[in-house]
Image (cartoon, rainbow, N blue to C red; front, side, top):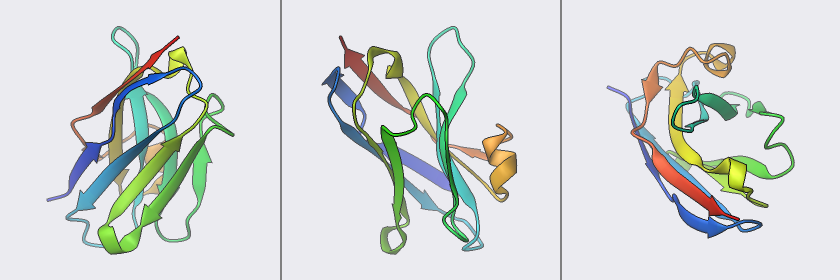
Length: 123
């Protein structure tokens, strides 16, 4: 059973930085897609960034390009989302998401979800 456990959310001032972590377990292959989505109450969940473990291909939503960076530590089975230059509109619950196929995940068809971690950016 795949499990995704997020950590690192919190309160930060606009312009500040946070790093989210997602520890993954249970993937039966070393080739899988993993990423972040976020959701504001009353709005649809939206994609933020995704990575394919096989070749490191990474996609970012236009709204976060140049500010957010994905990385991973394979020894720890952990993916990180470094968020710099945070804006009030980045406030949301951030969910770690996983699946077997990269474009499927990027398209929002997610096989596995974490429970989410709240990021609040004060202006």
